[in-house]
Image (cartoon, rainbow, N blue to C red):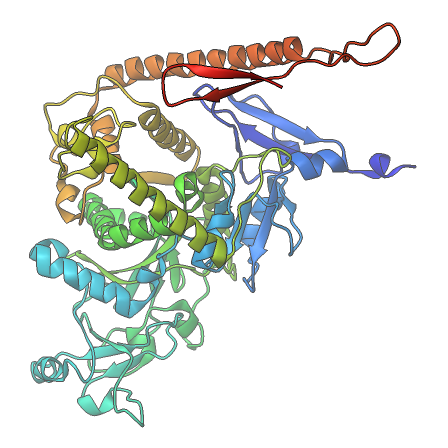
Length: 601
């Protein structure tokens, strides 16, 4: 029996795009790919029947570095029919793990996906997150009153003492830790953990919010799962379910017990009062509830929680906007052209709710725990991972036609130097032409993106309420297609769009350091009526089909011209005796005048 006969067929499901000339994406679900029927519209099976075809067209996943291989991630990959890539292989479709080094983003091809953005660590660090939110609060004041005040010792010693005199106290939090490790309750200056040599504290001294909303006399917080599929433009989705984590002791502001003040599961599971939630559905029991169970509780008490969840979404969006400009600048620096769409990010937002039902951001986790120690964790996180992988749009690609780029620092420096010299050369040529009067002088504009030839609108036009979309460039069409495909995929899972929002006032525009063309385009697209959207879609679908026909016709012409131009080489003419004739060679030597002299050799 041959190796090909021994080969076990690999099957995965793909969902077709509603737009022509767009790749199909791998479909993820809680069922195995072999058990899924092709009854649903747009769903189709793809089968690989040989090892050679598997290497060429298979869909591979890989865990990066020393990443903890959570079962929910591995199971989601294998249910969809993905194949595990070798540790030293670069032929994968999705990489899940720790952050790549900045220069490694150059190695990605246009079809690969990684689970982190360059620069996303700015939110994962407690001190960095506080600095960015504080900067926004200084600029926008009450709009950014969404996080507890934080201080640094000994720099803010005077401010800390003033707060302590008022009866407030603090939580000292190490910047790079998680699971409640290293958190200390601070009620006096002496209790702040300091370095023995320098006397400084590297922790964030965060004001304790002492008026929490209580359920059964216990404090709780929320773990909200947020998916960011793009930063330019900013696209944010919030998951329908999450976790409500309770303290295991009744709330007492004078107590120093960690089980009374810290809601972390990893802290409270060691308490004797911890109750494991073993319910199969969304029930209000144990020390950990689902967010759906919490909504049921609010409904039973007669409280309308619509405004609460709108405010939770608002807090999340503003937090992500605070680092948007930094992430976009890093994307431009480290990811050329299309590779900025290769990234996505799962955030775990820890949200505190006070007695007035106002949400506050406590911290943001870049790698939220995906451990499944109880039925509630398995149910929520299993569905969460499946919906994330379905949302991001993993594509099968032909490895014989697509290659990865170089990932060495020397190559990146070489590219940057080459780009810099090219820009300098173009600027010199432009200036020379202007001096000679061959072209009008260039006038600088406030928005550089509006001068690009690939854009069909200016930023000021898109931000105007009265302006209506009439035409779309190729670049605009691609961006809107990606957005519409994500919206379609979100309908099959638990994610709902949080940003961009269909708000007529464009409220969030004021919080961006620089409101980009891409953000304005998506906002304007959402403002466009459904009838107008459909007419624009039909127009650019025709454009795509025409371009596809043109490409096929030009390729046929090229192939035909190649065949006609391939003629047999003429043999040198010979005399009757078989000797070659001596031919006269003509050489043209151009002179300074209009005539040229012909020399016979």
